[in-house]
Amino acid sequence: LSGCLPAELSQLWQLKNLTIEANEHLVGPIPTEIGTLLNLMSLRMGKNSLSGSIPSELRNLQKLRVLALDGNRLSGPIPPELCEL
Image (cartoon, rainbow, N blue to C red; front, side, top):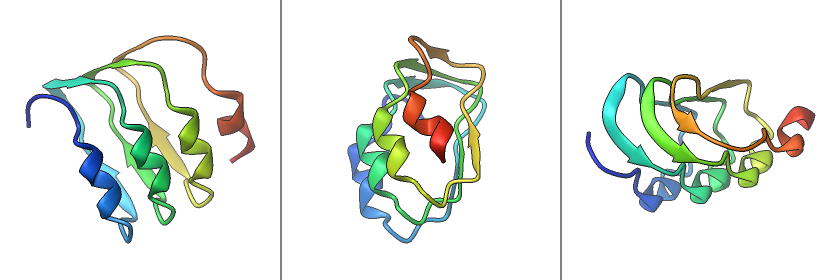
C-alpha cells in the first residue's frame, strides 16, 4: 500500500481486526472515519509513516482491546477519551 488510508474503510462495518503495519509508504493522517467501525477489537497500524494527531473519534470503539500506533510520525497528546476504553 502507498499513500493515505482511504476514508472508505468505514464501510467495512463488520470488521473486527485491522492490521496494516510496517509500511513506510503509508502516509497521512489516521482517518477519523475509523471511529465508526464499532465492532473493531484490534487496530494495529504501527511502523508506518502516519502523521497528525490520534483522532478522538476512536473513543467510539467500545470493543477495542488492542491499539498499536507505535513507530509513526504522530503528534500531539493521546486523546483522554481513549483512556476510558
